[in-house]
Image (tube, rainbow, N blue to C red):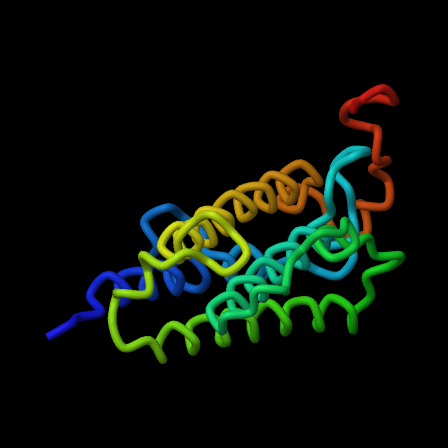
Length: 183
């Protein structure tokens, strides 16, 4: 009898990373985004850095990539900067709500695709159009989330979310922390 024990562990890790309030690593994606306002999501810690909104879009994009690959789509890829790192002109309430909803839906879609698998065998198969396995891709998504959750936490801290009131964020210039020549 074939099992899906490893797959179930991966699903648990995906869910813990995304929404657990008791994840051993600290704040989950949902927890770290809970207090982010549209105004904060649109701020840059410094020039040439990403906003929280851009990071959320990027995380969603790679979840969609993973879902499409799980469905066997060889052609789908993320080859353009716009597909990978969208720059938003402004992040208002509607845009921020949409970004969070798309991230949530992509999480649900990813877990749903994995739950359809009957056993762990597919984990060793090569992802269509890539040279790595589904096992590597799925663990990569988990690590990817943790990496970007850390970035978001640092952005929040750097912009003083825990120190300043939101209206004071306008007083922080993009270059105030690192100066004009920061790359």
